[in-house]
Amino acid sequence: CTDTGLTRRQRTLIQIATFLKRELPVRLARRVVELHVLPEGLHAMPSVKRVREWYEQSFVEIRRAPRPTDVESEEQFHELLMHIYDRHAPTLVTMARGVHELRQELHRKHGA
Image 1 (cartoon, rainbow, N blue to C red):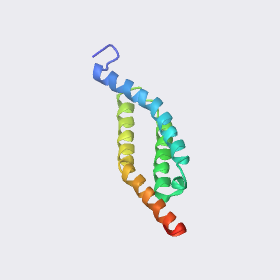
Image 2 (cartoon, helix red, strand yellow):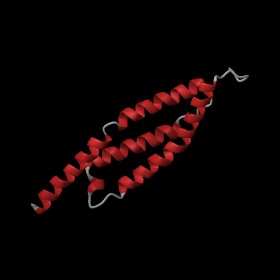
Image 3 (cartoon, helix red, strand yellow):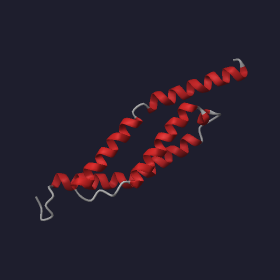
Image 4 (cartoon, rainbow, N blue to C red):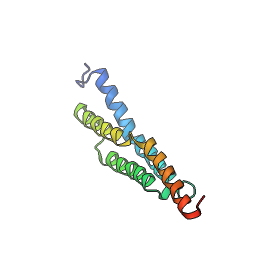
C-alpha cells in the first residue's frame, strides 16, 4: 500500500479506467460516423441501425459515467464496460444480417 491507501494494482486499474473513460467515446463516435456513411443503402438497413444505436447508447453511457477516481468508481466503471461488452457481442452477426437485408431489398427492387 502507498500513503494514499491504494495498492499498485488498484492505482493501475484506476489509471486504465480513466484512459478508457477518455478514449472510448472518441472511438465510439468514429464508429457511429462510419456506420452513417456506409455504401449504397447499407446504413439504412434495420440491423445496421441497431448496431449504430448500440454505439450511440454506449457513447452516452460512458460520457455520463463519473470519472474513475477511486476503487469504488473504478469498479462501477468496470461493470458498465462489461455491460457494454455484452451489448456489442453480437455486432459482427448483426452487421452480416444487415448485408443480407440489403441483398433482399435489392433483389425485391431489381429482381436480380
